Amino acid sequence: MAAETKTGTFVDEICTIPGGESIKLCIQCGTCTASCPNANKMDHTPSELIAMARAGMKKEVLSSNAMWYCLSCYMCTVRCPRGIHQTSLMHAFESLSIKEGLVHTKTVTPTMYRLFNHFCNLGVLPELWFMTRFYLATNPLRAWRMIPTAFALLKHGRLSIRSRKLSPSGSSQLKAILKKSESLGGGI
Amino acid sequence: MKYYTYFPGCSCSSEGGARAYDWSTRAVSKVLDFELKELYDWNCCGSTPSGSVDELGAFCLATRDLALAEKAGLDMVTPCSACYVIFNRTNEYLKQYPRLKEQVDESLAAGELKYNGTVRVRHTLDIIINDIGYEAIKEKVKKPLEGLKIAPYYGCQVVRPGFGFDHPEDPQSLEKLIASIGGEATRFSLKTRCCGGSLIISEEDIALDLTHKLLESASSNGADCIVTVCPLCQTNLDAYQSHVNKKFKTDYRLPVFFFTQLMGLAFGIPENELGIKKGIVSAKKVLAKYV
Ligand code: SF4
Ligand code: SF4
Ligand code: SF4
Ligand code: SF4
Image (tube, rainbow over all chains, first blue to last red; front, side):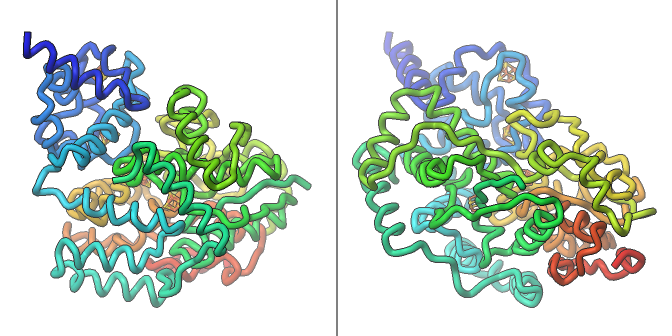
C-alpha cells in the first residue's frame, strides 16, 4: 500500500538520526506536551507531532512551527515514561525541515540558527556581529529598537567589536574537518 | 591543588558578554586552590542551533575541542550550561551510534586529530560543590552574605537532560552553596524552568513571557537578587529585565549574579575583580552592606 510505504519511509528517516529511533516507543500519554513551556505557542503539540510523524504526515510535520519554538529545555525528555528523547526529535525535525525546504515561513528562528551556525563554523561566536546581522536580515526595525539594549551592554563592557580568533593553524584545521564532514553528508 | 582543562565558551571568553563569569570563576579558583588551564585554540562548541541546522558538522565542532582536551588527560570544566550539554551529549552519542562515530572520526582525521572518548566534561558548579565541597568553601568565607535573600536559578541545561550531579527538576546544590557562604536561599518554584534561551533573539515576545514568570516568582518570594549558573540565563534575566518591565508594566530591579561572583564577595575579593559592575541591573543597593 502506498500510504504504508510512505509511513515507513518517514519514520525510517527519523530513525536514522541519532536520538530519533525512540519515536517508535511513544504511547501518546501527553506528558511531554503537558511539561512543555511553549506547547501553547505551537501549531502542533510535541505529542501530536509524534503521532503525525508516525502517520506519515511528513510535509505537515516538517512545515510546522512547533520545533522552532522548542527551547531545548529537556523537560519533556526527563519526564517521558518511555524514555523518548523528545528534544532530539525536535532537533531532528528541524534539520529535516531545512533539508527538505519545508521551513515554516512565519518563524525567523531558522535564519538565526543558520547564521549562528555560520559563525560557529568560523570557530567563535562574535555576539555583536551575530545580533546585528540577524536583526538586519530579519527585521531591520528591531535592529533600531535593540539599540538601547546593545548600548547598555556596550557601556558595561559586555559587547565586543573585536572577536576572538583561532590561530591560523587551528582555523585551517577546523576548515579541513568541516569540509570533510560536508563530503560525508553534513553541511547545509 | 587540583587541575582542570578549562573551556570558557564564547560567552565567557575574554571577548564574550559574560566575562564577569570568567573573571569571578578564576578569582574563586585561586582561593579554593584549583587551577583552570584554558584549552588552547578551542572553537565554539556549536551549541544547539548548529545541531539543528547541520548535525554532523555540529558533532565535529564539539569533538575537535574534546580531542584537543584529551591530550592533557584532565577533566574539562565549562561554566556554560549549553556547552556542558553539548559536550556530554557528544560523548554519549559517539559511544551510542557507531555510524556517527565513524563519520566524525573520518572528518577529524582530515584535521589530523583523533578522539578516543575519554574526556569527562563537567560544569563549574559540579566541581566546586563536589571536588571542593561546601565545608572547604565555608572555611574561606570572610564576609558572610548574612541577610541577603538569593533566588537560586538553575535554568535547564545544567540539570537536564541530566549528566549526573543533581536532580533534573528539584536540584539542591545552589541552595546548599548559598548557605555555605552565609546567604539565604529563597523558595523559587520555577528554579529549573526555562528562561527562553536563544529565542530571546528570534522570538522575543515568547521568551519575555518566560523571563517574566521567573522574575515574578523570584520577587514574590522576597528575593533581593537572583543567582545563575549560565551566561545565557544571566543575559536574559539581566539585560532583558527592562524589556519585561516595559512589556508587562512591572518594576523589577533584581540584580542577576553568577554564583562565582557571590562566592567571591563572601571570600572578600574586591568587586572590580569579580565584574559586579558588568550587571545591567545595578547591584549597588542590594550589595551595599557586603562590598
Ligand atoms: S511523554 Fe513520551 S510517551 Fe508520552 S506522549 Fe510524549 S513522547 Fe510519547
Ligand atoms: S525541550 Fe522543547 S519540546 Fe521539550 S519541553 Fe522543552 S521546549 Fe518543549
Ligand atoms: S554554547 Fe554558546 S557559549 Fe558555549 S561555545 Fe557554544 S555558542 Fe559558545
Ligand atoms: S534558556 Fe536559560 S535556562 Fe533554558 S536552556 Fe538555556 S540558558 Fe538554559
